[in-house]
Image 1 (cartoon, helix red, strand yellow):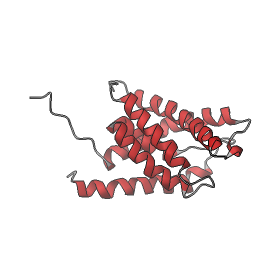
Image 2 (cartoon, rainbow, N blue to C red; image 1 turned 135 degrees about the vertical axis):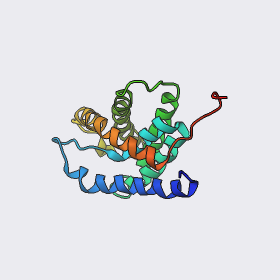
Image 3 (cartoon, rainbow, N blue to C red; image 1 turned 45 degrees about the horizontal axis):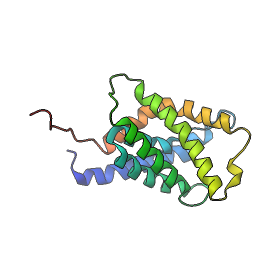
Length: 171
C-alpha cells in the first residue's frame, strides 16, 4: 500500500497539515515569549526515521512553506531546516532506537540548535532583530515544548514517508 504515488500525496498533505496547525493553533499557544515550532519537527523526525538525505529534503520544503508566513528573508528557514534535518539524519543513522526517549531527546536538542542556527544565519544575511536578550529563554522553551510534540510528528512522518526495510542482512 506504500506505492510511490501515495507517498507523493501523503508527504505534502502532512506538511500542509502541520503548517495549518502551526499557523492557527500552535501560534496562539504561548508560554511567555515562547511558542512551539512544529515545522522544524518535520525535518528532525524525517532525519531520525530516514537518514540525512530525507531530513534535508523535508527540511527544504518545510522551510519554504514556513518562510511564506514569516517576515524574514525567503529561504532562511529552508536553509536552517535543511541543515538541521541533514545533521540529525547523519548523527542518528548509527543510533539504536531501543529506548522510547531517544526520539524526544534528539528532537529537543535539534530544536534548540535550529533556533540558534536560524538566528546566526539571519544575522549573517542582515536580520539583526533576531538577536535579543531573551534568546536563551526562547531556545530552551522551544526545545522543551517541541520534545513531546515530536512523538506525534514522528508518527505522522512515518505514515507520510515510510522507510523501506533493509533485508540485506536477513538472507
